[in-house]
Length: 392
Image (cartoon, rainbow, N blue to C red; front, side, top):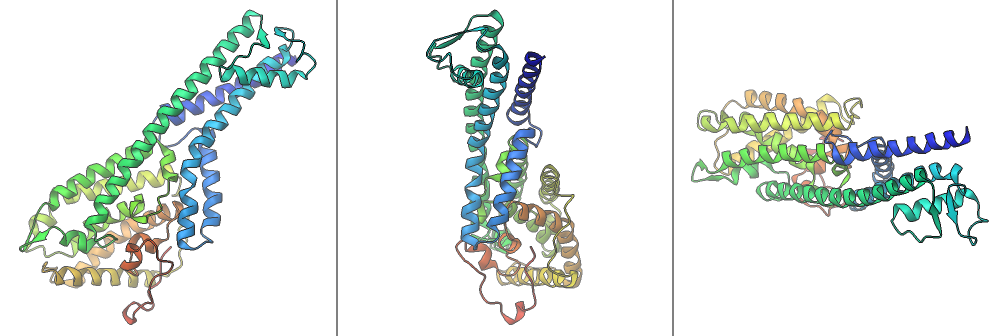
């Protein structure tokens, strides 16, 4: 009875590790296995809880340390669970089915089992304890193979994760430089306006749609990427998503349709908007954020004032750079309001979960605050900005 109990317990532990490795490393399913998912979310939520009580730079520094720690922590958990699982199989058979040197023969059976499991998993094999039954020799051989396989998979996983992170940073940088090193969508659009014409903007939008879809696949294949929090906000996925969605909203609502009809109705604008909506929904669903009510610190009236301020500022910047804006500003405002309302709540939840304040992602209150990564607090509000609250 004792042998069967320990054997079943050990095999169950090994099967749990095997399933988690399959779900986390080998299978693209937008979530890690039960072990990895529990580790990632528990550690992240605990760290984020303390991080939001710190200053802006300290918050980003603390959260930036989480991602690089989660990967080795998961490997360590796998090793401990494998070591323990095999030790549970050896324990009721130790020392009856093993040849044990006299120098270690008087130690407790559990200590011997853990020791033998450890040197077998790491393929050290000192030889002071050796199995002599066919069953234990087979189990020991299988454990050594599991150790080699785990190390190989861990190295491969680390390489692919950091490759995906590099691509993510490259995509974010392309948006960053076009948006005047911040969250300025008017600047991004004006960047491609030369001599009263737009040049290359459609190609940029097409590439942005492909990049965003590729980023989604990276997060689906490697969910731990969610918890790699860059120190610079402009390298974050929430900033990329905001710029993509806001760019489409501005093009379709703020520009003069009479003068730029081809751009306003261009398929690439619709494709980017649809892709960004899809990616945002998938990311929110993969993190179970739909079940959480949005924590609002502003009323719908205050929210509308913040959006109106952003809309007016965008219209003024576009006009100042020679871009013709929609003549009917009331209709344009309603169109912009509708599009902003479609995605802001979801993007807000996603941004907050990843450790970002809403205004440092959007710059709705102050574009300089979204552009300067080292600022502790936004600059003092002007009279035109008074009463506009920061949405978290």
